[in-house]
Image (cartoon, rainbow, N blue to C red; front, top):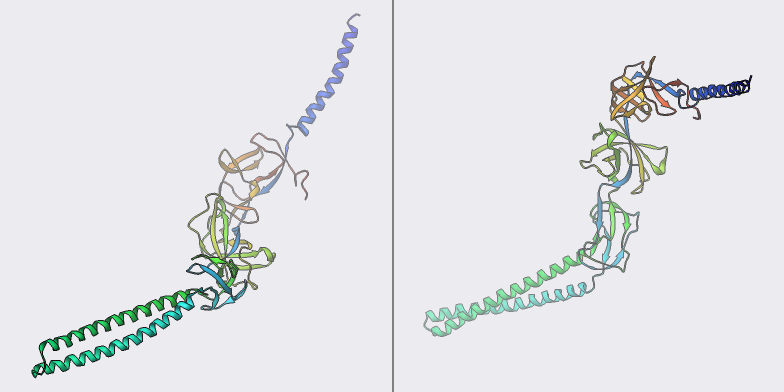
Length: 383
């Protein structure tokens, strides 16, 4: 009779704990850590894939000419503004000649003086030559002495030497004049090709050094896109492949192009491959240099094969594969992928067959022992 209160308390406690334990088990297996993981399945399809590469690039000019003086000096004038077109051989600007024009005038005067001196020396030489010949005849007729004839011959030699020196002086003056004229011509900034002025780095009145760029000129017909592609997805990229170019300022308007070349040097820092893509027809108006562009390169179509969504592919323990769903639950299936397209589909070379079901999305990470629950879409994901 004395144990009855104790038994009642035990029964009461068990009556309370048993429902709580049952509720804990139910919660653990329905929504807790032991609950099935909601997954969305995808069926492996047999189809042909048209892979493509997507990259971001900038508009660049293939040929750029930086025009500047070959001598240090002050910029006198510029005849064109940014955006103007120029013709080959057209004068773009001019450097201040300082005293070059006066030096050229002085050299012209020196040349004229040299010509006059040459004529004078030539006349003296001709006279000395006639005198030498005359006294040579007189010597033969014994009408003069040998000393006088020798003196006349010496005068002829002096006149010939003076004539040679006058020729050398005139040649030197002309050469110096030619050098000054060439220096004067080099002060003219001349367009080497037909092109478009894209930059004026120096304004008139500024002093510049030899080799410093004053204006930048490009060939507008040589625009191309300097594109970067992810190295992981760049398999198959080659020259000649067709491309679609969408300029950032003209969203929705696509221009046709082609891959001109793939650069032999890749970017080791960003892990990207560089390529040059040219327009089939240049857009009008021309895009500005440096504008961003989206480039899609079309790769050759692949033969039909097993195709899975890219989201289904996982990398576990260094192996690439998918979670294949069978009657026994999920099992990791290693695969070998070939290429992918821009719609998120991957062509599988080995490991899957059409009709297999794989996990495309899961609410949490799964393993070979996970319990799964197939749903149309994951909870909390908008349709």
